[in-house]
Image (cartoon, rainbow, N blue to C red):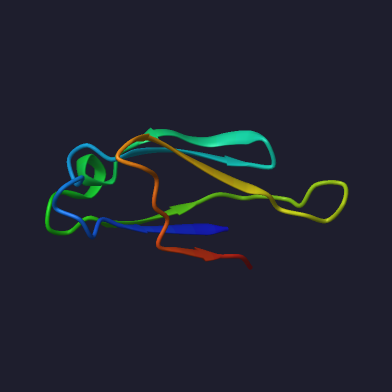
Length: 77
């Protein structure tokens, strides 16, 4: 699975932090895109090997710590 992040707002760019869980397992904690990629190039891809749960489902949960969480795209392959 690939999670695509892009910071589109100058207002929250330095403050936004997100927590991501997949199938109730934390995969990102306090993820700050601007700190990872820099100010005007704030785009990144996070890759994780994920298996579906016993029902064949993949459940994603995003919670914003500061400024709300935003995921710009998800690729499942």
